Image (cartoon, rainbow, N blue to C red):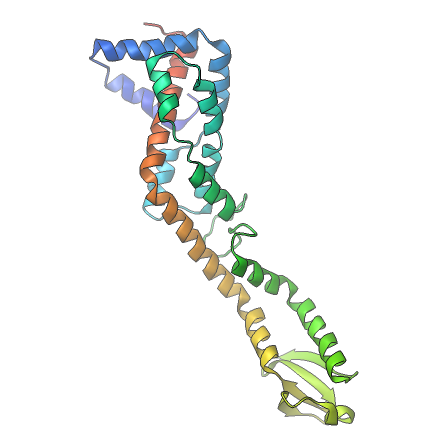
Length: 271
């Protein structure tokens, strides 16, 4: 077989043979149709080779142990469902026609995962880097702060120089005050009223502002906050998939059944 679930199904068929003649005939009709349709059989085999173990993936998702890679695996398998259904559209045997009718494409689940989880997420769900860009405005803003904190500081310095007319205004950082604005004594009379003095130097003064402290908190805390926020969003997506567990499991069973018929069709076992 192409997949582990397909192998488990064949083992189950061998250990629990059918007793109903009618059911045996329906199964054999499906196998015969695939045996007689070389191209259908080959195309199904190729598609089924991309199917991952949905049953075990959903077990991890339901128990809350799945990571972002597991969610991507569900979406990647769901991506082949439309093609599988398209191939089965003209099938005449009762079993294959039934699979065609009942196969859930899981489009909403696939769309949710594709929108929320990046294509190559890390194994860890606690270190960030798994939520796709554009899914959460807050995550995007925090990432921008992390990556563009230096440029923001430069932009603020330029803006403050223009607003105050203090050409020597500059910004610095230390562990005691965090980010601060430094103004030389010759421009002391031009310092805006909302600047809060924090330190007096020989040649100047150091100040902070509410805006500066707010941005400092964002820059320094962005890493921790984005990781926590990404984990929260990931949990919401995982919970959404878990809520649809029965649908996914049913789809997994139909894919396994398709592979079982395809396997025997390839062997030409028209018993």
